[in-house]
Length: 213
Ligand SMILES: C[S@@+](CC[C@H](N)C(=O)[O-])C[C@H]1O[C@@H](n2cnc3c(N)ncnc32)[C@H](O)[C@@H]1O
Image (cartoon, rainbow, N blue to C red; front, top):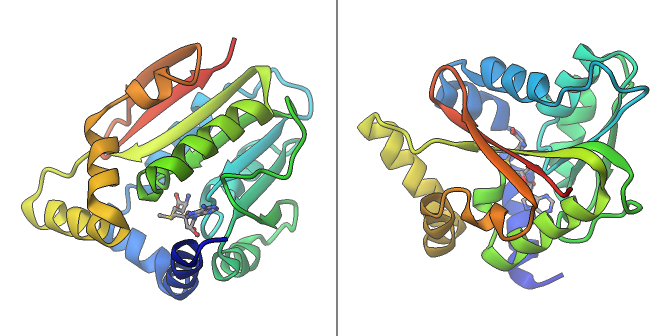
């Protein structure tokens, strides 16, 4: 792993201590609404013992939301920052969700093994080459009839929040993040066969729904 990647891991390990509080303030409590939107879009109701993988899961809110909504689901959260995974495990009262440490650019799972692979509010923070590798890996591990769901922030409208959003992107590499935000669904169309875009009711987040067949 490169020194930059190790530096980022350290940053996220420190961030894990106040991540949930930061998100609560940043999202004005819209987190629950956007997670519900993502989980409902997964269309798991008719699947038998579905498997869901949440890449860059952070403190596990999305992986846990899947487990809560679908008692028969096998939900796995995957992240390269141990600190984030510790927080996720603390939040998992039922102990049903698995949290695995690893890099999004190299997933330790078999081809075609998940009904849903998702990534929430994290892709824009990845360097271009890592992001492309991660998307290719998501495509590899999702089943042919499965879905890859990518949730991203809309660029905030309120000036202060917009400023904080860009400051955060700056710390991640402004050029790559800006390119990603402004390219819309183009990076996904280059990789997946079908790509659609929808928006959460509050307008805080957008969801890119991708499939490979
Ligand atoms: C902004 S947080 C998003 C967390 C969570 N998905 C959510 O919606 O709250 C970004 C997460 O991506 C993880 N991450 C960043 N680069 C990664 C990589 N290359 N492989 C795995 N996880 C990574 C970080 O550790 C962090 O937990």
